Length: 280
Image (cartoon, rainbow, N blue to C red; front, side):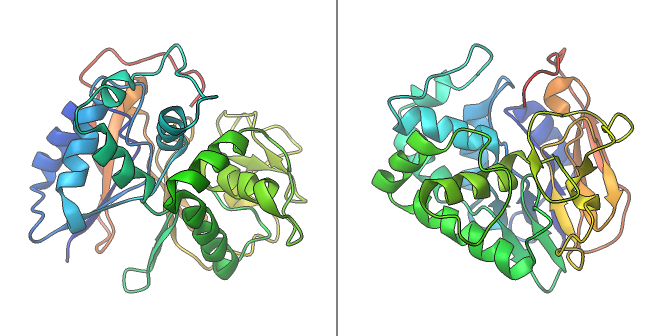
């Protein structure tokens, strides 16, 4: 069946609706993959959540860092909205609990063997093969599956350490590393140490770093991965990776690509003035 992947929406619901119209998307016939960051920074995050949830089984969305931030603010008393967040409307909505429960239960990784694609939001460390990536994603999903364990996760989720994978990692250090890979990763060292600070382009990459998908000895090279998160990278089809965050919320475009057939990407331009790229 026709299956489309769409990049980071981040509350840009006008563009999302326009893109679905352009694709002539029919939930009775087609399927939609969403690479995470449904919400935040854009003007209509609440409408995006309602629309995607209403699509039911026709849409599969993985969680991104902005989605986790919304859940952390809603569930953890220690987490607060940031100055540029546009999430208050969701937190005040009469259906907030239903929407947040639905969001919390979205997957961290989705794999479809028949299509030959695996979807994540950000990246995989070079030490992970597919089996490890899938197992680690399930660990994080399990921590999110119960409200009390999710609260504990959010109280311990933030931070850049540990930087390197080890099977010996346990508890919240292990979950933090998994979260950072699946929702924040862009660059790492040749040895697989995560670098979560640099957010630039491939051309500007410091000599000691690699984009995660070009890391030496990356064990997930056999996968075809569709992802988002990295607006400075833009549309990238290579290295076994289809990266489709084309920076709509920053004033560029929202991108869709058909996964079951090889076709050029379809884009719609940002309809607002866009934001200045800051922290993603």
